[in-house]
Image: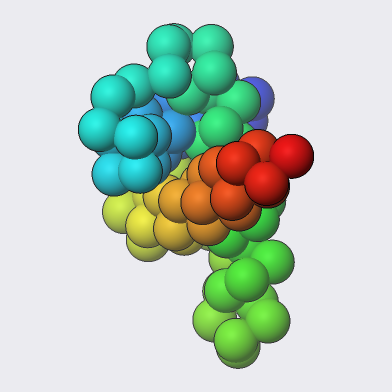
Length: 83
């Protein structure tokens, strides 16, 4: 996958995940970073359960990235509240 595809996937996934968890976007740059981190986290989680991770710029990869970003945001907010 090209860097442009990662950025586009990251932006869309990060925006959707931040809307699900926070009810507001994080900003364009943080949404991109959140989506890319979410794609990596989601890829690990999906592969752990026997499914494939991010496969390209498609709806399945968007689902993987959003799921990973939501997991990342929930863990981040849980750790930030306890600190």
